[in-house]
Length: 128
Image 1: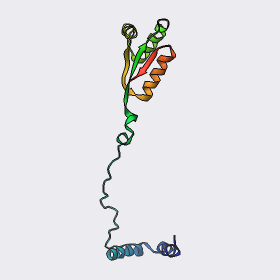
Image 2: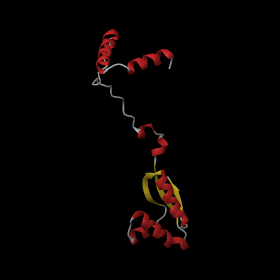
Image 3: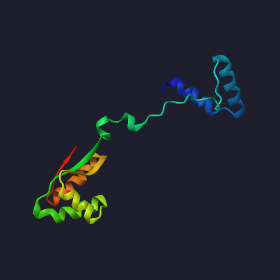
C-alpha cells in the first residue's frame, strides 16, 4: 500500500460508529454506489466437476475373462464367485464358457483391480 492509503486507513480506524455511517452515506451519494449488504448477488454458474473432467476419466469398461487354464480353474472360479456374487453353478458356467464378461460398465480403477485379481490366480483377462 502507498503511504496515502495507509494514512487514510489509519484515519478511518479512528472514526466513531456514527462518523463511519455518515461517511458511508456521503460516499454512496458522491460516487452513486450502494454499500448495503443485502444486495442481490448474481448467481454464478455452478461448475460440475464431472463435466469439467477429461472425457476419458469417466469411461466405463467391461472386464472380459478371455482364457482359463485347466489347472487354475478352481482358483479362478473362487475369485469369480467373490467378484460377482454368483452361486457355484452360475460362476462355473461363466468360467467354462470363456470369453465372458465378468463385470460390465465399471470405472477404470475398479476394472483394473478386478483384472489384477483374476490374473493373480492365472486367468487371462482383457478390458474393453
